[in-house]
Image (cartoon, rainbow, N blue to C red):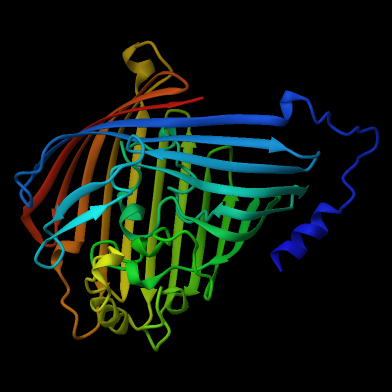
Length: 403
């Protein structure tokens, strides 16, 4: 189906009056841009007093592209995470009784996140086919370091759903007046990765060379654009996960459905953002039971899975650079309040671990000496469950750049 749709679009007449075919030897056919992030973390966690401070070469992201014709481009995204490839051994004390885990990707990885053919038809209708991004939530669209205040991306989205989220399939998008839409049909998630701590986020299929596509998923995003950076919108996702398990070991459907609403308001020195997400998992008790019997070699948590997850955050920043008379582009002082619970609802025989109900209180600074360079400082006070004495305090510094 995908290839027939792409073929029909590629055969559309694309020459306009007076237009000439681009010179295939012209270097302007090729494009490259990207960004990078480096972070420092100082931890004071009552849940893990021995946790050490850390430096992280979080990512270098490159976006190469080549124009094949006036309306057809091949676009890619290559991400180098945590300094490259390698293997690490870590001890996860928060899952069951604690276990050692060896992960090839944890020590760093080089990933081809996106590779797709993009066909521009009209402003109201365009299409991508290949490996592409699902634009769910704010972190998927505000993913470059000058587009979010904190040193790392939204904790709400990062702990509940894949962030950023890439799948293989087809995507139609466009804008009609002030309304922008994005509709995607892709492969679905794999329920063997679902966990107590991160709900469906680890179900993102990355463990094998190929992804299973027995169960497909639909995703829709709608945004009403009120200005260059001001918008309100929502997105939704739905799809079964049973058929994408490595083995046919679950004799029941396990549909994942989620919906989120988001907004961003930018006026002069003031920036306000917010997002709320709710999701449900069908037959979470049967998924949890099947996951307990998975092989150690699969490298998954095998912990109980919540039947529903909930998360929300709101943040605001104000540019005080002109008030202080300092050089540079911006100096934003920001604050954020976030709540997320990966086991917001559980089945009757599943223990609702209060640890996975988390509230973050965050404040910090973003300084842009020039437009393409940003320096960040952040302090986060995280409260776990209802125990105000069970906290995780983190101070972090970040450096981001774009080109």
